[in-house]
Length: 324
Image (cartoon, rainbow, N blue to C red; front, side, top):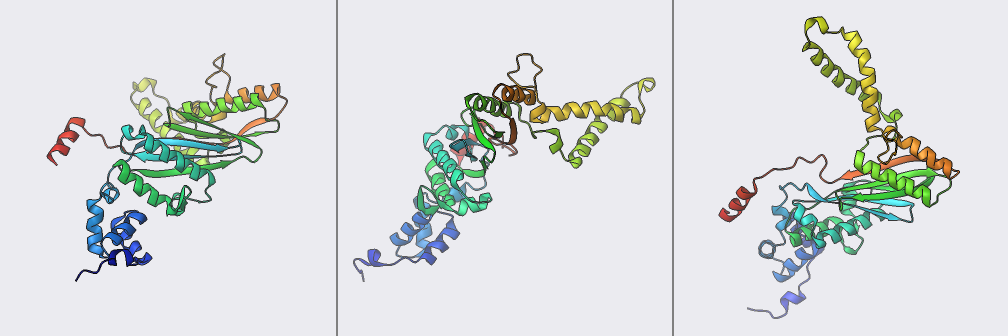
């Protein structure tokens, strides 16, 4: 017997919505709508979600998302945040809907108090507190039809000066630099912005050599020693050197290698003489402006770094889709 109005009068509980979300991975609003449409029938709700494409996110979970965008947001030169949001293809990274979403994630990261990515994903979405960040992400996966991932974020607050930001390649690289300075003016800001570009271009690991741990020094020395010993063994016997001599020669190699990965010791990319280091450049700017100036911290994100990318033959991929 049909009972008119049952669908509209039936109350869907939070527990039902939670169960369906855990089963399907679909967003909260989709789950609630599916349960309403199917009068609370869990199996029918799953089918409704499948038919309406709301489970696309789950189907894409095993794919590799190594493209995407880095986005940097800032506030009054005192606070900045950088995020990396990944997509499967570079094509989607150029999509305006995706770019707008990444900008919203960047704004969320600027204001978040989350300590890690899990906490970040579970907090309320700033633009719509009825959903979490993760639920919004799942909704975007359904809209864009690719696996998306909010991979990481970092927030930087100035304590003795200001922060400067730089984005390169339309979002391929995002940089934040925190500077300590007693007299902040346009010339000083320009100098630190130039250093942010240096970080993007030269990818330093540290600010100065004293940040390099003894363990890493020993590890790098071990690698260089192994290389040097191999080169030595390949020489004619009369030209080979004793190991103690080789180890002494490594001191120079190590020093050169550490200079290449330490920001202050790198050659400044705009140096007119090709010799001025970043540290010397900052000292000259500080002297000209009657202040102190140093780099306290930097953050550099590059899209996909550290992710093992899946290389596929495009023609084969198309044929696989046609056959599938």
